[in-house]
Length: 356
Image (tube, rainbow, N blue to C red; front, top):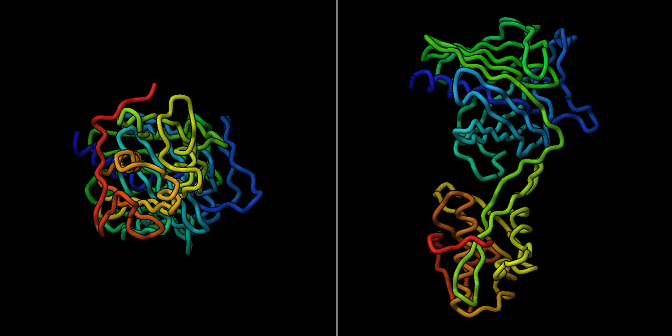
């Protein structure tokens, strides 16, 4: 069973791509529907034709043969030659960056357990795994870095899925560790089906639905201080992200929201989040504008509460227990508290209470 799961997860890392190339402005969005005959493909085209734009689109895949075979896909960020996808199969969330250039579609970066949202379009991790390449014709072959061999085995293969029947390009991957997978790509749609098989198992994932104009929604926990009772409270807010939305801006706006029962303010009206990211050292780095200090108007105890809320909110969002806070790229310093170079705030949510 472990071998089956390992092979299947390997297949997921290779083929969880449904939309990667930047489509010309004004081009029609794909809208598949069930048909009795395959959607025709006039010409094979190039690799990029099989990765259309999918901004603000939710792709849903129905699985068979494994609990992780069902998954969904959102596109978090795009550029002229790269796309960053968010893939959730119920076991983990995978962020992956795919580059479309020089007649190839290549996975250049991937990160598991990406429950937070962060722009990684400029990152590469040395994987350089080609998913599809020109020429789009039967017999085109390439080898992955682990020795697995990929081959285009057909360019007009009829494939049935819950969302319709498609004419597809079939790519077979023979894994160096044993087993194989076949990925089916439809022009102007993307990946429509994957079948992974080996000794004693077969697992498949098929496109079941495409939801258009749908943002990615995420529940984020925000922490608030109470200067009267000295306690820290939290509230879960559901946030919506469209493709290419800046995460720090959405979080900033949400943190400034006023609602019934909010005990105290963390970010003042004029405070800006200049930068926010999870560093390679595992710590969250957040840089706020100086308004955060000048508009705080708090005593030492209340200020400490506010800083704890900053640590709890942004540390929890990124799954880190350490937060480095700076002000306009300088060390944090107020009339009460000063943070030295390398000194971090520690996440501590044990004594916090949910707001009703």
